[in-house]
Image (cartoon, rainbow, N blue to C red; front, side, top):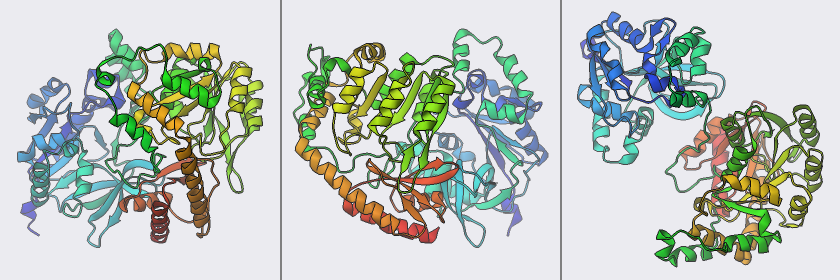
Length: 606
């Protein structure tokens, strides 16, 4: 090897981002300028590079670029501004300095290296990696060839090495990366990529060796809490810089550690078995509504006295329109319920395992979630009703959330148990989330009894699942009139889209289509569960929904998920008592046959 050819030309440090997870401090200064254990993060990194003999250091700036100006005089670094920092992801920082990428360290401004890992001569292109026994949402290495080059990386995993901190690109690697990036720059999807995702896309041509480091050798801080844990004195730095914050920054500060719920983006249109969309598709009559839309539907507000969807729901359920409210999906119904009913310090009882969205709604109101148990049974999961009632007596919750069919286990709760929970907790509002309503035996008599007998229960439903109308964003709630009026204070000023409401009405009225679809879903679901339970070490649980919850006794669930994704099938993982489980949506028979085939291969490979 020509060692001179791998002599380091420069280090490129990306420091352009907002670091939104470190608000409100990151509203005042970029994260790279945080002081940790007495040193500015970025300055520590720069000093280590200088001590290692790296001849040129380039800092790519963006947000609050002026804060970095002092580094020119103090360390002689070169500052290059990424004018697109507010539009695209961090690959835009590399595009801004593409002419400078040679034999280069590619670094982030917010990493902390316990010891100096840098050198003036580097053996080969590499990415440093740290091992995690527990599941982590990082870029995990899934394969390494005989020469030590990484052959596979995917997001998320346990018992895996994940990429973090320093990486070095030799000039040959850099030429390829820059060429790929330049050729694809007109594609918006490319500009919205993280550097790591772009590398994964071209991993066969962009070879990086895996360099293993100790878990404390290189650190990355995503949140203020992680910084405080690493350096207790960091809180003093934080308070000192925030003490003169204006009112707006104080609002940012209050909400800085509240995490919003979001789904992972995907461009994939087939094999989507991770979102519980109805892959049998909605009634064709729904599409007819779109085809017959008028210009007036686009430019006029819908201010008519009657709401046709409300009347259709009332007729279909046998429940008065006074007890129904319509919203932009059932998730928005739940958010409005939380917004109106919850205050700081309130307790919310939620199922575990369960949908993390409930916690995000509670967190936004600074309420506290307490978990109750949904437990594994012989053939299905089941609600631990005694645990709900005990936790309710102990915590006096403002809100008790019950999901039926339950996500992610698919189990259902009996009407007797629901009424027991409602009647024994008159001081709590019981939210019965029926997002997956429709796949079981449909009857409205119990719901009508519940909301006309008790003032403290609200039932939420959506058109996204059973009706197959996920993207029209229509959901609704059923509850007593006083509760409906109260929740109504947080409903949108104008009705949900008129076109979307007519689509939903068309779905309600096509009973014949949805009766057939329900039966087909049940048949495929039953077949799929039976096929999975024939496999050694696989347990598929009975479900009342359009998905199946699956336990693997001998296989790595995350590796199975990754294998399925590589073969065009997206599935979800959920944790139950520290063990990972699979959740797979039910689709048409031919698709599920493919899932069984690929799952068998994944289990053999795992």
